[in-house]
Amino acid sequence: MEIPELVFVREDQTLLHFPINRAEVCIGSNPTNDIVLPDTSTIPDVAAIIVDRGGGRFRLRDLTDGVLQVNDAGLEGDECDLGPGDVVRMGPYALRLRVKKGDGPRQGFGRTSIMSREDEGPEGASIEFAGNRYLLDPNQPFNVGGHDDNDLRVEDAFASAFHCRVTNQRGRWILMDLGSTNGTEVNGLRIREAELPSPAVVRIGRTSFTFEEATGARRSRESTDDKTALGRFHGMIGQSDALRRVFDLATRLAGSKEPVLIIGASGSGKELVARALHAESPRADGPYLALNCGALTSTLIESELFGHVKGAFTGAAADKQGAFEATTQGTLFLDEIGELPLDLQPKLLRVLEASSVRRVGGTQEIPVHTRIVAATHRNLEELVREGKFREDLFHRLFVLSIRIPPLAERPEDVIPLAEHFIATQSTRPVVLAPDAQAALTDYTWPGNVRELRNVIVRALLMTDGDTIQLRDLQFLQQAFTTRSQDARGSVRRHDERERAKLLEALDMAGGNRAEAARILGVSKSTFHDRLKRYGVPLKFGPRS
Ligand SMILES: Nc1ncnc2c1ncn2[C@@H]1O[C@H](COP(=O)(O)OP(=O)(O)OP(=O)(O)O)[C@@H](O)[C@H]1O
Ligand SMILES: [Mg+2]
Image 1 (cartoon, rainbow, N blue to C red):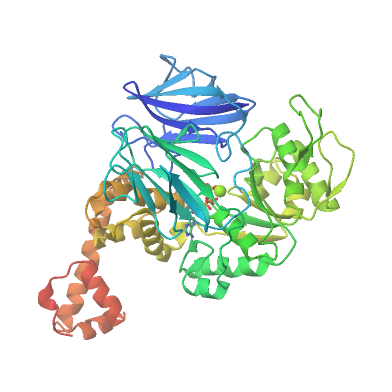
Image 2: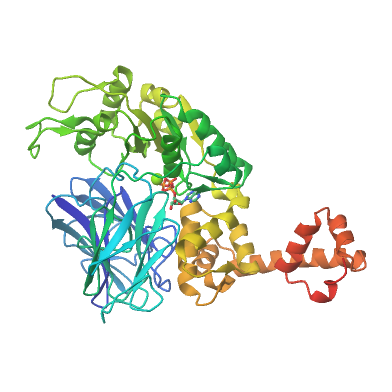
């Protein structure tokens, strides 16, 4: 089995191994990229896109003004083929495409198309090290490193003081390298952040420990009402009316057997909504599988979806059950449905109509009762018009739909989300300074919630203290400037305007806060918050 990956090197030091498990890998300085390069003096926003054409074929798209070199020569156009061993240079970085011969796909990594196993719930996971067992708390991050403040302290000169962290995110255990010097490996694969399969051997420096999740562990489900009342819904955070409508709709549609189509921009939370639909449904105790229709070749998707019989094609060594059969009591999430190859579209439609599946190369009809949830960031109507998506399949899938608005349309969600990410990513209490809050709220978030999460993760690594300042939102500001406006300038101007309004109202009210709040038409508490947020001097303070 071939596992393609990108190996990143700077000054002979290997920085990162990145498994190519998606249709496109974007590289550049902007935090919305899949691989973010910190050195922005030479690397533009998006420097390159590696496109997985399937079957071990790749294509490099150069989005710079000729900065990229392939095998020490400039490109002739904007694109070229990329094969195993080819080296792309971008500024101080070199990137090598590697196709490793492995012993099959490793669970959760590499070119495995089934991205999540059955949702086990967060309970019952543990780490075993040197004969000791550490139980993991799904609400607390678990830190590992050389420093005394870690939950697991290792004596290893090759491990960093704060090396890596395990957290539970919506029922999945995620391991994150905290920028360690020597990196973190999971089952022999170097990662920056990855879902932990169970069991997993994690290696940091010269130390190894094992992670294991108890089978059958299930989260006790709170009622939906309790969750949405708190602006939470199956791991989703959101207080805006727009997102509450999404929660409501998901609750109502969860009981139906009809397919649901989730539409939303990249990073807006489509996968979380798909999981919530499953968790809310009567099938919650059945299996949930996710399959990315854009990540594999047509042949592979077909066998992943429908299974195959022994000898159906080269490499089909035994009968194999497909995702439809595996989820007949559960939910199958078809991510990036817009990328489903045209030749497979009628086959999918047939299964949906007939409620039965025939394995590739097989003759037997096997009944299936799978509930389909599909997602796309593309405009499917347009794809239909362009002849890239079949109209009959479109109508079959588009019976019920949920549209997730981009984060820019729901600014009320930004700070609660940012605080949620701080709480799940940091061991110490950290708050957001007023100017940082203003900058986060004002930003347009082209990469949506995923980008917000990345910005917070980096800010936490930038700050040593208990407050994230505007200056710690380094990547955010770079993204701002690339949008041809000076972020700091625009935030400053916004702050100055707000502050002037507050001072003017206080002035008119003779310093009486309640009166000033009334003049501005806001509540007293909002007014007080704004005084604090925009740093209005205390001499206006005591009277109210
Ligand atoms: N409302 C939310 N509350 C908490 N976390 C969220 C929310 N929305 C998105 N996220 C987080 O943001 C990241 C992106 O979400 P998700 O993967 O569901 O997006 P997506 O729409 O499937 O994106 P893509 O189209 O790129 O696959 C994830 O880390 C997810 O946990
Ligand atoms: Mg997704």
